[in-house]
Amino acid sequence: MNLWNEMFNKAKQVQNARTISPFIDAGGVAAAILTASNNIYVGVCIDTSSSLGMCAERNAIANMITNGESKITKVLAIMPDGKVGPPCGACREFMMQLNKDSKDIDVLMDYDTLETVKLGDLCPNWWTDSRFN
Image (cartoon, rainbow, N blue to C red; front, side, top):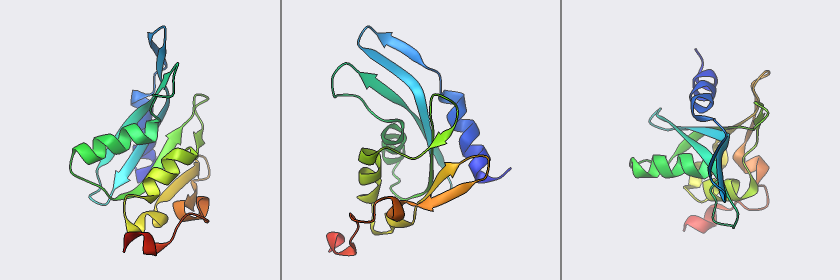
């Protein structure tokens, strides 16, 4: 099984839209990230009535950081319709700040064709290596 399939399947396992309270819904979007150590971390979105929610990618990154890792090599997000889509702008920015090589993270854009794009290409005006000096 290729890594994209494994990541997709792990994200699908946690994707389950659910209502937590009258103010919080979760799980409609799921994400999986692959680290440089070949570990897969998953997360789900947490949507709130205020701006205090968390995207699925950030949830997965929090799990990764909690486990002592900080270098992502691949990322995918599964939308409520079951199709893969790019991370939101805030998550892209967050990933770009993790380390100097973040621009080289592969982002899955289409699960059927396995089309990918580099994170740096999704954030072309943001990236400069001088930010790490």
